[in-house]
Length: 78
Image (cartoon, rainbow, N blue to C red; front, side):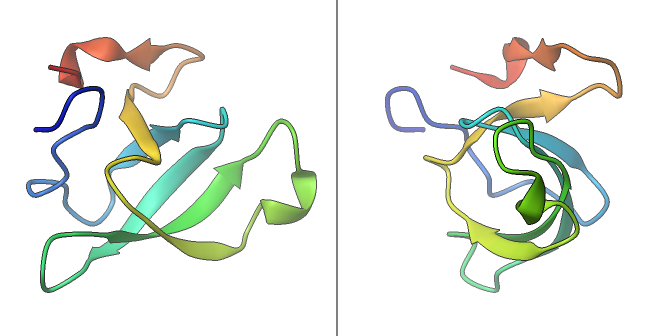
């Protein structure tokens, strides 16, 4: 894992994640090469137009796993 980034190689579909912009996303599918994950925005506090949309995220975008509450699980960081 590079400094400050999350190892995304083990992320599976259905996981809920926090992104660096404060958004909460649900993983739809990891890429075959393990470098990105396809996500759907569940919450986006600074851009509501993102909610419901899909995007590909890298380890630089993902901060940690979300635990379903309003706080991140920072133990995923190295």
